Every structure is written in C-alpha cells, then in structure tokens.
Image (cartoon, rainbow, N blue to C red):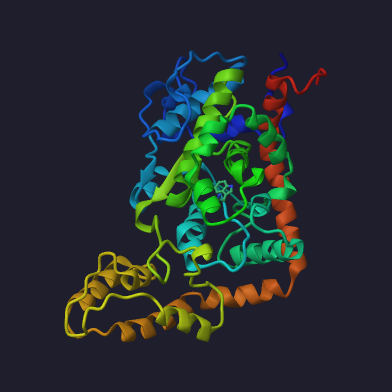
Length: 419
Ligand code: TRP
C-alpha cells in the first residue's frame, strides 16, 4: 500500500495541523479514537439510515502520518460545540478549516448575507476559510445556461464587494475543481438510498413542484464531497442545512469505517442568533417564497418591500411584542446589542407606529450597504478581474484537495497502477 508522504503532497496537511498544538495540547498522542466514534454524543437525526455512526470500530491506521493527523483533529473537534452562539464561536473557532458555499441563484438577499456571507467573511480573520459558489448544485434548479453563467460571476462580485478577501481565503467556483464530482461518485457507493429519501429538503422541494430528478435526490452527496474533499473541520450553515451536515458526517464515518481513516468528520456551526432570518412575510427568507429583501437593489424597490413587511394589528397606542415580530427581527440584524435594546424599548412604549419604523429601516438598510454598493459597481464593470480571482482560488482549492483525493483513489483501488 503506497502511503501518503509529506513530500508528495503539494499541500502539507501535517504542518497545517501541527500549528494547532497550542489549541489541542495533545497532538500526536497515540491511541485516541475520533470523538464522534467514541461517544456517539451528537443528536442523531431521525432520518439517518443505519447505526454505522455508533459502531465504534477499532481504528487501524495504515500510515503513521495519517494517524497523527487524525488524532490531532480528534482532539480539536472534541472541544468544539456543534451549535453555538457567536460568543462560543469566537472562543472556539480559531485556526480551523472552515468551509461553506452559497448557490449562485440570482440576487443575493439579506438572509444570505446575515445567515452565511457575513459569518464567513468574519471567520476569515482567524481561520482558514474555504468559500465557494456551488454552481453544480445550482443545476438542480437552473436550466438556462446563460442565466447560470451570469449569476455565478455576479455572485462572486457580490461576495468580493461584501468583504471576501482572496488573499486571506480560498474563494472559487465549484466547477473549477471538477474533482469534486469524482469524489461524489465514490461517495455514492457508501450512501444509503433510505437516508437520502428521508431528506426533508428534497421532500420539500418535490412537494413544491420541482421535478424529482436524480440531481436533486443526490444533492446531499455532492454537498458531502464539497466538504470532505478539503479536510473541512467546521461548516457554518443555516438551520435548513443541518440535516445535510448530519448526512455528510454519516457518509464520512461510513467511508472511514470501510476504507480506514481518510476524512475529517465535519462539524456544523449554526449561530443561534441568526439561525433563521425571517422574510417579509415572517417565513424563512428565501427566494422560493418571494419574501426577500435584496442586498443590492434600487432604493425604491427596497422601500416597497420593507413597507410590505408583515406586522401584527397592534394599535399605535398599544405596546408591541418584540418576540416573533418580523419587523423587529429584521431591523435587529442591523443593530448592535445596545441599539437593539433601545429599539425594544421603543416597541414596548405605546405610541410607536410600524409605518415610521419601516421608513427608518429603509434608510438603515440602504446606508448599511452603501460602501459595498460602490465596490460592487466597480467589479461589475470589470468581469476579468473577478474571473482571475476565481481561477487563482480554484488552484489553491485543488492543492488542498489533492492529498484527500490521492488517499481516496488508493484506498478504493481506483488507482490501479503503482504511483
Ligand atoms: N446546500 C447549500 C445551500 O443551499 C449550499 C452548499 C453546497 C453548501 N455545498 C455546500 C454549504 C457545502 C456548505 C457546504 O445553502
């Protein structure tokens, strides 16, 4: 069995992880099992097929380098809470490999921004951030090639103008690292159909009338490949993606059980405060519900939508509830804690008119994104810069993927000649 040697990887996973000793304190200590195998402490979602995750097979490491890498990760992951508040996050999330993606499906909205883009942009300061645009995933719902192409470049420009820094992070388009589809195929063979059939997101989409094709069905497998291919430790996602993350963990564990420790088993990170961002009708903000507030749009369009935010029928001279109050929740996204407290007081004081709050909110949102809007106009005028940044990002992502793919090809026997 050829082993993965340090010199053979253009991306050096070992040195990358050994930088984390200060955090784990136990790098290289022999005999540790991965925490998820040891304890089975995660809530398991009702949908996951089989009990493989709890089987706790004895680890056999074919190669000492890989053993060191896995054990170090096990210690790091053991201390990271699965779901956390922002405070937990900043306490625990340092120097981790964090990955997430957002579909390039047209105008980005503030739900995308606060739910995913901003947390990612903030995380690039202290972590190794991997962020990509899953355009293969977008094929599940977009059949117009020209629209997908345009959406992809525009989403990249939006991300860059909102603060994604290609110097600090790895930022690319999914299809520029086509190895992810190779890994998807391999993972298909350790993924149970029963588990995929229980995916709520699949069931929801089909019940909304999307055709039940295989791309939609195996969406979680491609997403798993996205995550595992780069040795991802932490995946910040919205609550709606929690089940997909649990599937990714299941699939990683299953592969590791069959072929030996290969993949890092990723952790989901769902910030409680922004877990669900309501749209103008109070449901989760989502393009498919038509209840979004776009980050970048004309001011009168924004105003029209903000004025349409659903409110209860409390009279102006009555105090207003803030809990489950869509207007309060959306406004709060743009406020610091102290400002949020004073908004709360205003809501609780009789005399407040929702319409006045809405007018104010239009300006708050508009000003919040003003500087970003300017940067974005520059990038939109210059596609080639955006494409160049994406290509450079894809090169970095491929380097990071290489050792994992090499292990996969060797261990599955796909690589049949002596390398
Ligand atoms: N499914 C995610 C969404 O719709 C997008 C996505 C694709 C993703 N691959 C990923 C998110 C990998 C995190 C990690 O929001």
